[in-house]
Amino acid sequence: MVNARLKGSRSGNISTSSANASTAVEREPFRRAITLTAVRDAIVSCDRCARLRTYCAEVARVKRRAFRDEIYWGKPVPGFGDPQARMVLVGLAPAAHGANRTGRVFTGDGPNGSGDFLMAALHRAGFANIPTARHPDDGLQLRDAFIAAAVRCAPPDNRPTPEEFEACLPYLEAEWTLVPRVAIVITLGKLAWDATWRVLAGRGQGVRPRPVFGHGARVQAPDGGPLVLGAFHPSQQNTFTGRLTPEMLARVFHDARAALG
Ligand code: SF4
Image (cartoon, rainbow, N blue to C red; front, side, top):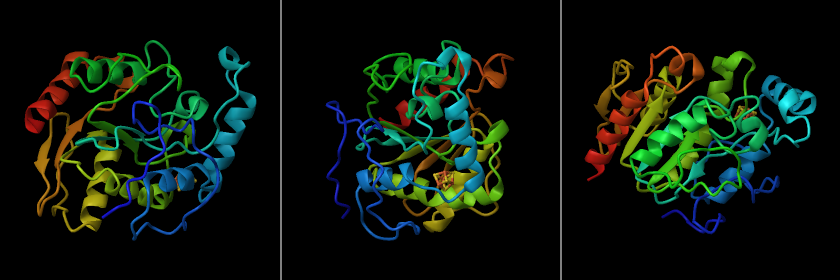
């Protein structure tokens, strides 16, 4: 049984704001029981991917003009949400001036950004207490939902390399393991879908051949695994072009809610 002693906000949501950079756990894949807090600390202090660490630090140093008076987070970004969640969302990676600035996943992307688009849908389905994600101190609380990512450092052009996906996968696996009630995983985009099925394969719950990704894809992982739902990523590229509409994302969370009962 995992030691679930957790350090988080008053809501019980785990966030980055109280994380310190000490590395209390080994940096190998987490094969033994540890705490979610220890995993978070290991993520925040990770420097496995030199290219990504250099890029994030440079973005944090140069900054975007609109945020020039802010101190960027500039470090890897851990998961956020309810440690007793039955639903885990898997995103791709932090945005350079979003989560890499604020230190919280899908936070600070702006009024028309992916964070607000996602949070509006989560709020409508009852998984979030507010419909926006602007700042780590905005009071956002997730209920029955935890948001993780395939890669924890912002990548140039939003394109991590295969090696970077590989290096970061143990963190997704570790957080997932330490959110022990997970019954549904919603993958935001194909790359998150692929990372999710790699984690499941490592747990003996994979499917061969790997199921095909699509918005609305729905696959029950075998051997006690979760129900995996596919959704297009709420990137501006998708939301501005109408490839992903609020109604489409709402339908996915409606399905998740119905499946959770
Ligand atoms: S992407 Fe993941 S493995 Fe690579 S440096 Fe960032 S946290 Fe570490």
